[in-house]
Amino acid sequence: PAMSFRHNDSMAELGFQIRPQLDPKQYRLRVNAGRVKRTDESYYIPDVMVFPTSLAKEFRDRPDVLEVYEAPLPFVAEGWSPSTGDYDVDSKLPEYQRRGDFEIWRLHPFERTVTAWRRRPDGTYDELQFAGGKIQLHALPNVVVDLDALFTTVDR
Image 1: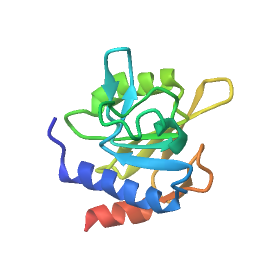
Image 2: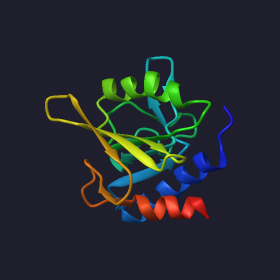
Image 3: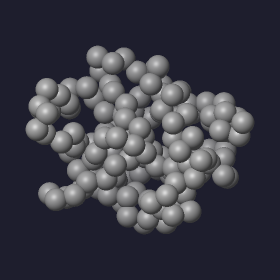
Image 4: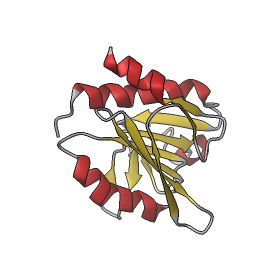
């Protein structure tokens, strides 16, 4: 579906903030590129995702194998857009939770908010709302996202 400038820009800016904070020996980032396994025959392409580098071993040097991650990921984000907003919450969010992804974001570039779902040890999720400030990622404690800086950049 067609995405707005704010959707695309906010997802790119989120990736730009996270990437320099990751140790590439341990983690990699994808912006609208990697795939997460949904069923045996389909997958989702998150707007932003972080995965452990070790998960790429099976297809890193294989041009004949699609990059699809089955294991739970530490971070997955979707940007809200008018064309996919309901679908992301109604379809993708439950699937990311079923997969066991550790932190799931829905970033709303027009409202300048983030809704985060963070996995608890018992498998349930806490839902948190953020409207600015610096947010330390749940499964990546050395990574901080500055929402004020992200939204200021997107507003320019």
